[in-house]
Image 1 (cartoon, one colour):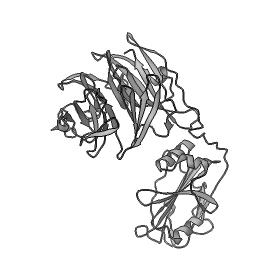
Image 2 (cartoon, rainbow, N blue to C red; image 1 turned 45 degrees about the horizontal axis):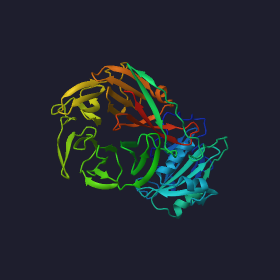
Image 3 (cartoon, helix red, strand yellow; image 1 turned 90 degrees about the vertical axis):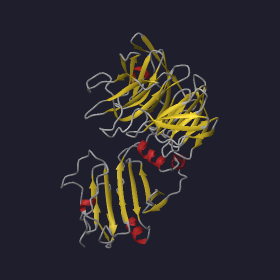
Length: 476
């Protein structure tokens, strides 16, 4: 049978393909035997493949086959992916697939047995069917992906799949509820003439999971709000601990959180679906898209989203009024107003608007521009070249304090401190100030008492989960 070429990209980049003398054999017991490092598949005669469709590495393999002789007209595709991965990575996949980790750990989750292997069956939004099996002694995860109808012909292919299960001595990490929470060791740091003191504010019950770079939070009085995807949690903030009060599933995924001095909570969403909440109830639909940063008074804010025009949003008697702000047409060199090519972050203090983004031009750095409330630029913060101090990686928070400005750099795992006149006072590594090990700085906000609150995630030492942590900075 003449096989149609259909190229499959490798699952993992950066690995080296095995040489011609290695385990990759596309002709074995018959022309339709595919024998790779982690599995073997004997295809029925009415299914096709091409050797170029086979990816065979030492720790990851994939094969895609199709029913009939022509890929374009085939109604059924069958893909096998085998990947040696950490238990953390596998459990994160279960979570994102809406598979309950407790049910999986307890063995109560429904499984389908095919060829003496117990698979978890699930589907995605594209009507593809997934069969998932984790071989713990080797740390290899197998995924079978079926596109099309799960008919007898497809089942026949599945029944001819042989997994190569070898005990390599892999030991799975503890489950999150059995793991050891990460305990930081914060210590005070000299910043110019100031002493900045970090304080760890623990959750009364460890908050952990497998998500990083997606957490947002906000503080209002004795309440802390935490958002992850479409889950909104409310905590009692006692000043020394955080106690969970409620956890709600929202109808839309949130992007950022802000509060005002009146206790209102502003939730940024795309698609014109931003909302304002108070006392757990939605009191206003803002109609805004992208990130809405709000002045502490709650009277107005600014929306931003990458290269889109910034807008000033005014809240007036239950109405939402919008007008262009000073950064517009950022993608157009001729029509652009302002200094930025795109904006990544806007923070608003009582007295200033702080904008972080990439400057217009070629090979330009990212900077923080500080504007007064009349939109006049006052400062431009950040290094020009990679070797310069405070050359930004990816900022995740900006704050103005009584004595200056702080920026949190997620990529560099550093905090930058400037005086009110823009003089760089210090660059401080997370390890030195918080006693963490390469965390991700998720968010940073200023509390009503002027202290700076920092939200971080940190992988546990036993790889059981990522720890969610809150710190308070005082002294600056």
